[in-house]
Image 1 (cartoon, rainbow, N blue to C red):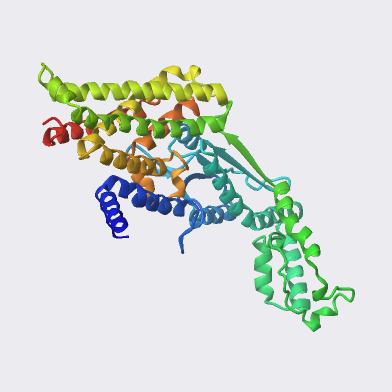
Image 2 (spheres, rainbow, N blue to C red):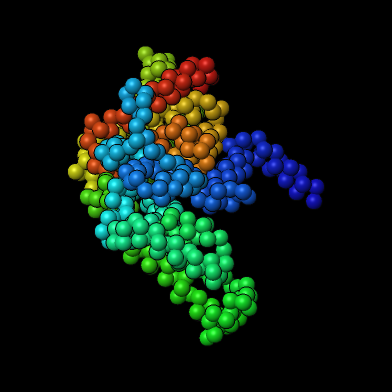
Amino acid sequence: MSQVLILLRKSLLSFWRAKAAVAITFIVPIVLIYLFGHVFGLYPNQNKGPNGILLAVVNLSPEPAAAKLVAALKAEKGLRLITEHENADGTKRPLTEADVRAAIKDNNYRFALILPPDLLPEKGFGVRMKFLSDPRNEIEAQMVNGLLQKTVFSHVPELLGESLQRQAHRLLGSPRLENFNRTIANTVADHFGGDREKIFAQMNSGDFGFSALGQAPTPAAKPIDPSLRRLDTNAKPAAATTTADAKPAASAAPDIFSRIVKIETEQVAGKQVANPMAARTVGGYAIMFLLMAVSGSAATLFEEKQSGIFQRLLSSPVRPAHILCARFLFGMILGLVQLAAMFLAGRLFFGLEIFQHALPLLAVSLSAAAACSAFGMLVAAISPSAAAAQGISTFVVISMSAVGGAWFPTSIMPDYIQRLSKFTIVYWAVEGFTDVLWAGRSLLEVLPRIGVLTGIAAVVMVVAVWRFNKGTLFD
């Protein structure tokens, strides 16, 4: 038994000394649990849903209800409203439809709601709106649609009241409409009680009780006042109202509103994509596996040192800088070949349109491969051993993939993680691939993404070379 305990102690000590194994066993799962907790809303007091998705709102309507609708959208935690355009001199002005179309095309934001001047038409009854979108991420697009419909339909009763009041004003004229509202207010006050002036003001504001359409009957209704029961001798007792009776009324409200509220939708980008899901997801997984492959390749530097290859190379007219440069170029070539294989697989399996965008896709792939190769070199430079390099790369790659948007939209995450995502290779590579494969952008239009990835590659490679010079890899 003592021998078993001695061997167990040896195994535990060996495991504890292998910091990479400890990190993969404990730190990586904890980080993923933390991130997925935000995705699925598992934390107490957490806002269940997206966090600050940008939505531009162009309010061209003079109606008071339109301003209240904009205020309600601003109060929605899942959305972050943009209502003004900043000029070159720093001054601001209200957004126009041309502004939001250009901004969506430039990917400054992906969704816009336009409240037109004829939000409440002069003739007819209803509400008109326009919704512009660039749904390059399906999850994000569905969330925005859900939040928008919830907020809009909660304010439909008020809008419908204004629309009805306007039509009555057009048909009856101001004096007759005012007399009509006054008569109804007095009748309601006489038979049901209440303040006459408040009822009159409520009717003048357009509140005709449409809000009841959007509210399902409560299961346990309050007992009916005996003084009011005499108004309907055939009324069914409150206890006789069944769930089956309530369902049609509850489900009828959205159907009624959808017939009256006309929301014109227009997809500004991605309409020409044959397989939208593939265009959105292949790039994210491609960059994740590329980081893993390049990091693993860079870790072979330790194997070459242990085998004595470095000593033989350095005894010839070869300097450490030559070895690092060759290894960096090897990582780039490996990255390009791997990306090409994955995009060709996407073409073969999902009909991904890559040949139509060959030049910008190649440019983004080249810059992404350079950034990934530099990352692999940095991992090798800061690691004391091949095992440590493997552990560090696994931890960082998985974290960057989760935070950078390779698995799910960053808008689901808290604000500080959304800001952090912009410091990752994954974020800029995913944005670049999506710009090409989803939005069909040209080489000139994706140059900013390429510039960021190239800058990351240069900075990371400089740090890696500096760390190699300080280390003992080539000693």
